[in-house]
Image 1 (cartoon, helix red, strand yellow):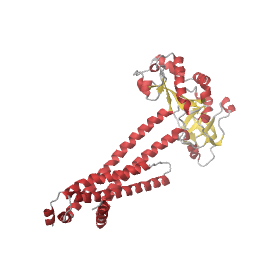
Image 2 (cartoon, rainbow, N blue to C red):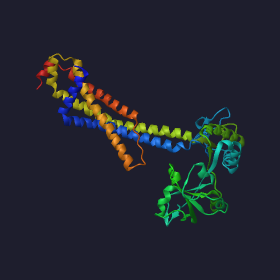
Image 3 (tube, rainbow, N blue to C red):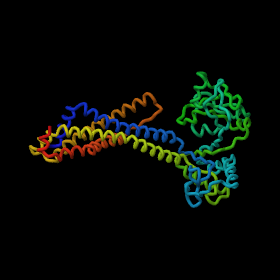
Image 4 (spheres, rainbow, N blue to C red):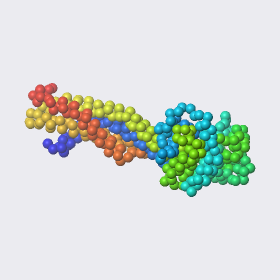
Length: 426
């Protein structure tokens, strides 16, 4: 018999035992669909993070934190290149000198000097100042879910954030310390259908007038925040401490140059001879992105591994069904052996049947996965699922492999039957 004959015979057997075949298909289908769907969610999440961060790969962040503890960034290396924070000192507490150096580095003077030295390669330098308050903003008598951020005028331009309505901070408003605020797009809902521009919100019991509403971005924290001018915040709530400094390069190609040379400048500024003596990190968003890619990849593989347990269950189900089939067809096996069928013919007969059963289950699983993906996209557009061509080939290929692995035992048991004993079987 040739392969085509085995396939025709296997399909005929599966059609004759429809209910048994369907039950076997369900097990392998659920197993493969689970792996494909969970992997698709993981790949979708990873792609969304990469997409959201792609526009910020030109940002270098200067922030406080011991190189050996923060785990965040790369420091400038006086011997020729950036040094990973994991390769620096293992000190656990910053010295007084380090704390002083940090305050010296995270200052408006540093911003001005960096701009002066590297201005031709820098689009903007933005200080990041967290607003600390014991109470949430109040809108129309209700507490808001939005955070409050203290920013300078350059913040919106540096991040290419655009307005949906209203205006950004005006020079006259910041110079006169006016209580004005720009709202993130997601906070429009808190104004109960009214135009946010012109409305009043209360921050630390002080009234602020909304002058602008931002267009939606891909960053949740940006869309869910109220922005007040640095000058106003300093006047109303005391001097605002710079927590970190964002350096926006004009071109992504200039990021490494800026990271390295700004690191040299800051070491000179603080009198440090080695990165381990510093109490700050100079990191790029590309490094954060690499770390996130690695973490999401690990999580996806872990979840897929858990889903793989259902594959094992489906495979065992196929093996059990095939063993039952071997028992029921004992006389048929005996007859085939009596008329000259060899051991390999019997093995191929049952192995092809197992592989076809598993392959059909794999194909249905891929179709079900696509249906789930379409449903998710329709009902929850914010969630992302990516079923790659590679994943389709892996799923169908793995289903064939499952058919071979779990079909071997039944096929071997059928092949080693004695023809006379098989013919006597009732």
